[in-house]
Amino acid sequence: MIKIKNLEKIHKNGFKALKKVNLHVGKNEFIYLVGPSGAGKTTLLNMIFKFDRPTSGEIYIDNCPLTSIHDRQIPHLRRNIGVVFQDFKLLPKRTVYENIAFALKVMHYSRANIRRKVSQVLDLVGLTQKESYFPNQLSGGEKQRICIARAIVNDPPILLADEPTGSLDPDTSWEIMHLLSKINARNTTVIVATHNKGLVDDLRKRVVTLESGKIIRDQQIGFYQ
Image (cartoon, rainbow, N blue to C red; front, side):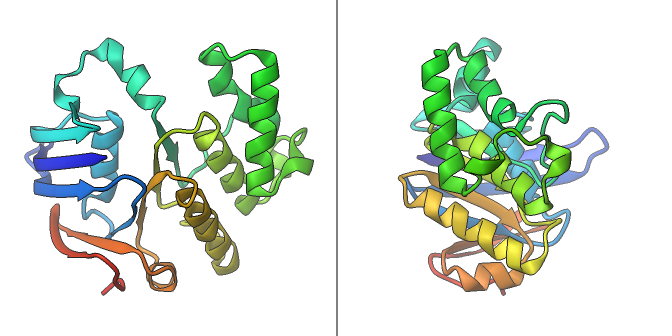
């Protein structure tokens, strides 16, 4: 599904955010990307989503080289990748339903299809009764569930989550991780960047550890060491 070869990112100030990163992610795999702040986790996710460009190296998604695609092809690429952020990025003046439906409207889905798909993902994340609420009426955990629903509403084959539990309490964090595991079981490749050791140890998945821009450990089923 995702192949990364000799990926490097050097910022204008000379800081090397990624150093010769090599990583293969299989279809429908669930991976924890772990490491301390500044290790390169977010930078790597940004490269996969084309938020940023590498200094050198290659990223392939379904054998398509991202470094070779034209800018006009990026929106199509992003339709196949859902993204969940730590800080939610919900539209404050739109309801839960409108926040989730927004991406489908941009892709010109019919009103009936939008209603059907939004209802399906709200049911999946357990918030069907909150569709008319505004973001400021939701708890942190509910906001993150809505962000997840928005990210998967068009059934992308890949889901990236950058510190999705960073601002949540332990019980809510556990619920969010189990929701991501449930989504993975629906044939979605999931990559979660986190520094939460307890959650990583609880859900025994593949763990890839970054440190100072390098992959220093890749355990198929492991703990956060």
